[in-house]
Amino acid sequence: MSVRVRFGPSPTGELHVGGLRTALFDWLFARHHGGVFILRIEDTDQKRTVPGAEDRIMQGLRWLGLDWDEGPDIGGPHAPYRQSERLPSYQAAATQLLASGHAYRCACSSERLDRIRKAKQQAKRPPGYDGHCRTLSDTEITEAIAEQGGRSVVRFKMPHEGATVVPDALRGDVVFENRLLDDHVLLKADGFPTYHLASVVDDHAMQISHVFRGDEWLPSAPRHLLLYHALGYQPPIFVHQPIILGPDKGKLSKRHGATSVLEYADRGYLPEALINFLVLLGWSKDDHTTKMSLDEIVAAFDIDRMGVTPTTFDHQRLDAMNADFLRDLTPQQFFDRARPFLDRLLPADIARPLALDPLLPLAPLIQERVKLLPEVADYVDFFLTPGPLDYANAELMGKGFRDNPAGALAAVDGAREALLAVDPWTTEGIEAALRGLAERLQLKPGVVFTPLRVAVTGKRIAPPLFETLTVLGPDRVSERLNLAAQRLARPDD
Ligand code: GLU
Image (tube, rainbow, N blue to C red; front, top):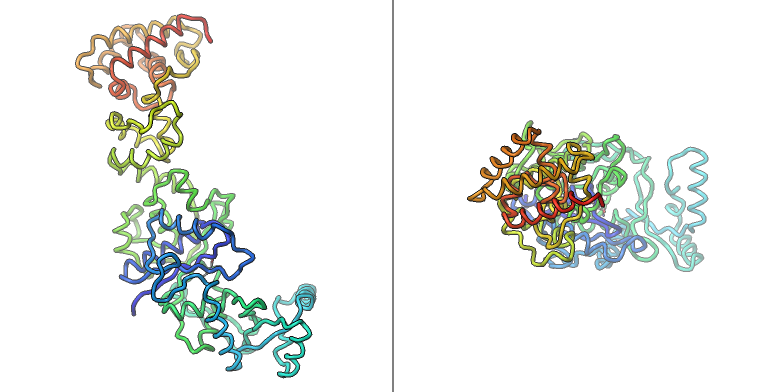
């Protein structure tokens, strides 16, 4: 069977973790089997359609690298790929179902539907349509529709007895009792289809072989299966993926810090880390592998290692994974990835394009220290800034020289002198000079190094001191130490 899968987002908002995982699994499955991945925009609920959402969904998929082979922007053999542009095919299917007796027209007013909903609620009966128009004769329904000013919907005629068995690739057969399913709407009064009709008609027309989707859609599956049968179509293979839980075991939501795909991009996650993280929410390569390249995932991905147990979204795990992937980059790749964030975050007085090349030797040290790309800004700003650094004298003194500017000054002056003798200017030479200074002063290295670190970086947390000094070079180091000495010689600011 040739594999054809589709991702069918509704452009009603941002693409969140659940949808993203579905898109990823679709894409991986298609790529693994050399199949086709289709993007189909399911915009039949026009009231909920948000302008711009479709573009943002596409941007998010592109950022993640999930390219599609057929879709609204690139077309394909089954165009159009936006459901609002496919209305005639849904209307034709509804007409076919009316003619074959699988569907009927319904002219119930919204007031009546409201009344039965409330009555059922009070009687603690399952909600759903009561089948009022199902038994009306042709004349009766024509009259009823005329009374409603010509408004009517098309409903599916659910069997009242028996059960519908949905074969699910992960769960096996899932049995639904038909009497619990109501005569749902297929075509709305405005001529738009409901999700059920549209997805079945399109999945058939687009020759979809497998339907991956979140298990919140499992209750809809018997409706779909009955529709396939009524229309004489061959159903696809259903793969309902397990629910994603937040750390508190409730359904994952924004309050758990789960954000949209573009926010992940914006916060400095790497797409490859997010993919590795997402794929493990419902799939595993084996019992132990937790980190994989995209090629490895594509090669190994299949349904047989997908699970049905709910998975938990663990933000710390995602951050740790991102840090791990950041460490794998070469220095050049790391700065290339960081550059857009640095361009945005670093102050305007730093010249653009940013001169990052001299900092390349430091990249591995920064890579060990950051989880997200925007954090890089804090590790490089002091190299690039043309002006004097901004810090308070208290910071220069640190804990070791608290209220002791003279002590801190002795350390800074001692360092100026010791560093003058360092030639060539290497990390080892600098280290030897400064450790020697600490010994001479009979102080712990940490105490002596704090004022030096603050003097040259403006902060207490920075890349390692000796490497930092190496990259800054003797002139800028001496300039910054001089400035610190002047400040320490002055009463506090
Ligand atoms: N449009 C549905 C959604 O946004 C897709 C469901 C399906 O894949 O069948 O979740």
